[in-house]
Image: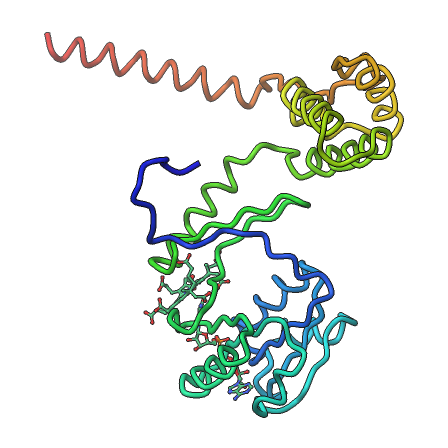
Length: 275
Ligand SMILES: C[C@@]1(CC(=O)O)C2=NC(=C\c3[nH]c(c(CCC(=O)O)c3CC(=O)O)Cc3[nH]c(c(CC(=O)O)c3CCC(=O)O)/C=C3\N/C(=C\2)[C@@H](CCC(=O)O)[C@]3(C)CC(=O)O)/[C@H]1CCC(=O)O
Ligand SMILES: NC(=O)c1ccc[n+]([C@@H]2O[C@H](COP(=O)([O-])OP(=O)(O)OC[C@H]3O[C@@H](n4cnc5c(N)ncnc54)[C@H](O)[C@@H]3O)[C@@H](O)[C@H]2O)c1
């Protein structure tokens, strides 16, 4: 968490906005719009795209052809009538004046809007994204440097634990089964559920959690939750993923022997010439 010292400020609110079955209007169909379409489709929204067909990026065309969640209009933005029953607007057009006009209309109607390239016309910014199944990481520089956000994303990607997405998926299923077995919101049952889930997540490795199948979950709940303990992977019928042991092959050994020999010879030569 951030510092508990005041003053706080100068940032933005980080959220995971739930867009399922909401209606998103995307004005423009070029390169930037194609990225927006992908981000919005991941969130299970319905999309209306307004853009003349000659301006469509190949990726946008493919999305339009393949997704039954997209309605496409081959024309320019028509005016306020395009904003009826819309929950969010994203514009990615090469026309700054039109973008500003669309932004004003959205603000009058209190529809959240993002205008690619014009920060002051954005109610929210996009960020650089990492996705691994249900794991979502967004890197934001709050408008300061999108390119650095992109570079930081690549570094974070390399440092994420393997199997994190699978582990989260499986823990999600386990939590759902636990809530069915021990239903109720809040109170003592809520506290006990939370305590046990924390113990499971902290006692098992990410890799082990990713191995959970239905039978193992059942045993984990029967032998673990019911007895207020956390069994080990083997105790619920799981077996560790065998990581292949890498034996040094001849081709690895030979260069290292040669390298060692060259090193020894050059140290010897240095010693000899110094004398
Ligand atoms: C993260 C990412 C997400 C996405 O758009 O999907 C994103 N921009 C990305 C790339 C990118 N954009 C630009 C470059 C050229 C290099 C550079 O300028 O750095 C590159 C790099 C590239 O193309 O490699 C040009 C640019 N961008 C903005 C302006 C206007 C301005 O700053 O005034 C200008 C023109 C500046 C000028 O004219 O000089 C504005 C915005 N861009 C944002 C998001 C929001 C702030 C996000 C944040 O700060 O965290 C914000 C405020 C609004 C918004 O669009 O939501 C995506 C990387 C995704 C990835 O690769 O992972
Ligand atoms: N925020 C970012 O990350 C970022 C990065 C690069 C570029 N940009 C900016 O985003 C904007 C879009 O970039 P792009 O590369 O996708 O451009 P692009 O030229 O590929 O696409 C623009 C699209 O807008 C359409 N269009 C123009 N006027 C329209 C209107 N009135 N109604 C409907 N559609 C209309 C065009 O037909 C075209 O398809 C540009 O202003 C660009 O500078 C932003």
